[in-house]
Image 1: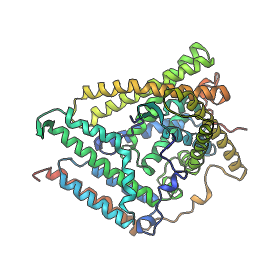
Image 2: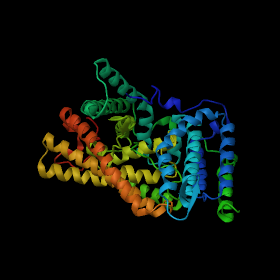
Image 3: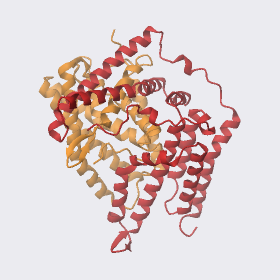
Image 4: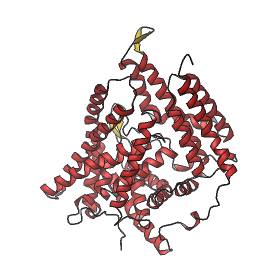
Length: 263
Length: 230
């Protein structure tokens, strides 16, 4: 049955708190996360100490943002499909093998699996910090300040405004089907689900037309007026924010120079 | 079973991820240019609602049986419904929101995911769909069949793109030939689900509002259906 979603999808993401990270402009935060994750991805998996430092840094960021770890933990589940892939790496990996208990596993595969899991987990945690400290309105504003083409900004703006409406509509349609005795068990239910999704598309499209005409009627010409008047970010804020990716980058550079294990 | 599988951070190395970001920017720029005639800042909210639909459709699980379920990737669907330029743009917006707000797909892998799930599948699905509809006519059966084939091939193409990226910047611990065979083999099967669902949805829309199926518009094939209703 339609699962996974509470009715207010995007509001589950944002954790309203007072913190310095919440106060940072969204475009600064996006750049901070991007820079930090690039550093993480460029770190060789054999430098285990570097990853331990990364986890400490991420934990500190969570503390600074006043976000409890239990908010982050459930959202790590998005990596699950790749965890399966990672677990296969040591089994099917090439090169010299090491025996772990009763089985022999590929050494390179084990390192690759560890690297994959560590990097993906850190990436998800940093994305969660971004999402839980940034309201969707600020997020759209941030994309605009990053000079994303205006068409994409306005598409994103419409998307974050209407995602809850359309997802709720889908839940209402599901409930209506169930009320009529429908049960989605296997592929035999697909024609019905396909028709429902077709209807959902038409409803979403027609809603888009109505919303769009209503916006034009109120003077919309391709830009939301309130998004334009934002003060420039002071240099001190930029420097404070930059300290985060710089920390990650320093660790990454050291890890690449010293190498792993022995280093 | 979990398609769509968004590539997370660290799966492909940093240089290839960043290069993919560059390729994705170029691809998206081409789409923005191509969609220019019908999609601009003023009509973007309408395209945004199509993106919302793709997002919702991706979230929904199709029960396959035995507790497993399949997802829709939606690139072929988006292209057939709103055209070969606006379609990938809608999917791109979805991928961006998934990466930045839902942590689904890595932020450094966004370029890879845009290539795999928006650009490459559209590049395959759209010509296939148009070719079939143009040569066999636009009866309901042909449209549904063409959507099925386009949806199926879009997934196979997507898995090939992934295998190529893996060859360029994946871990060396696996034999690339084996990875490619396994990926493509699995997705030839998973793609059948995509093809079927795409065909069912396109069929339903075509029956109710044939004017909303951009891939069937005869004279204005390249013109997107994202237009001002007036």
